[in-house]
Image (cartoon, rainbow, N blue to C red):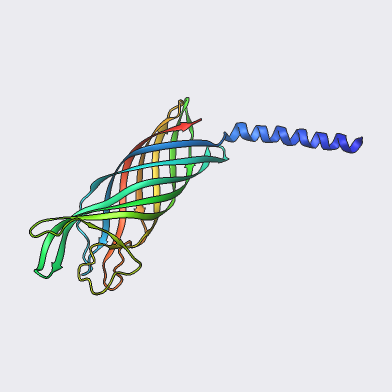
Length: 229
């Protein structure tokens, strides 16, 4: 009888402690979002000089889950579909010789971001600050060329190393991308939120390993979402 009483007190204390933690930490929540992003690819060309590309407008859409770990702090794993790319002048070589063309590049990724989120209360709303890594996997891409005797639009080829026989190497990219996320935003008490986001790619996504060519994704954007509280 005494043992049952002690066990009952332990279970009651455990339940009270769990309830107190849940009230302090909050609860898990699910979110959806979508928006536009302004992308570029930075790095060096085959001669070692800095690339001079331009920003292009792309889009993103995704979902995430917030898991409380401490007061006002959350781990936020997510899954998103995001379009990246750039526009700039390139030297294109074929049987008719070498000429300068403009290339508009698009790469479509499925990404897994995992952010540490800080959400202090501001009145009845929340400020949102977040950062963390992401891993991306390219599922498709294309290059559109404009200029004199420009080739037709071309699908990108995803390989680990570009063929040395191709003097251009303008369409060969690696599947994987790894980088960092930085986010700041505001979440209203009704679950609607707005986020300013930025990404910094950390690895070379170009598949040409035989030259100094290096390309890394960079971008920033604005998204609007809803969190099911």
